[in-house]
Length: 267
Image (cartoon, rainbow, N blue to C red):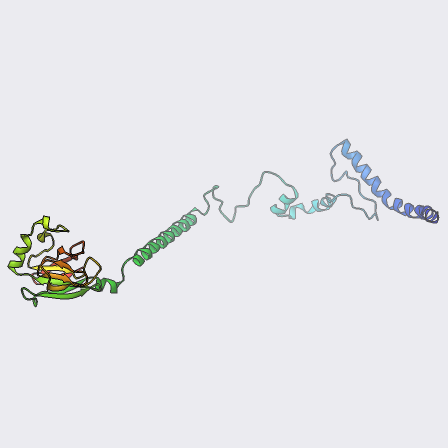
């Protein structure tokens, strides 16, 4: 009850100053609304706010005072105050290109330069990959071996090292060449003709590794006076072909070629 009496006492005292303050505002808004319904408003016909009033109706009222100085405004400022879809540009100090043509040479230059850089990078990457897959220079140096045969007497055999493997080079006599050529293929386990195993019949070049288990055969031994592997008893003839024993294949003939009559390159 006490709270109700206090509210009833204070409400008239609070409502009267508020009503006195908002009354000019309400009257001004009502006048503007009624004139807006009647027709379009001009800035000169708009009702002015009371002198000494603390309320400002619309921001457009400020334009009335600025109209007198409209001639001093720049085109940009005037355009911002009066929006229009018809835009005019001041082109007295610059040139305007048609749409889509401005800066085209520079764009072409940038695109061409970028594509050139991309192509160079791709070429460099391909070269790097190819070179990484190629054998190194030191590997290529030991991949081939030049042998001088001038010191190899007829009927003798020398052993050279190629790629870590022994290679037998036999300077054969005419009788050995004849004997190898007369062997029938039906007698051979790994059938090869002698002429297919020697570029020059005088010199036989074979890898000195037994085809059974990788042992090194002994030259000038065995039942065929060729090579003999004492580990498991494989016998090779003077052409390096397997004749007896467990070895399944003939001695390997490496890739080689003659530089001249007395020099060869193996590999």
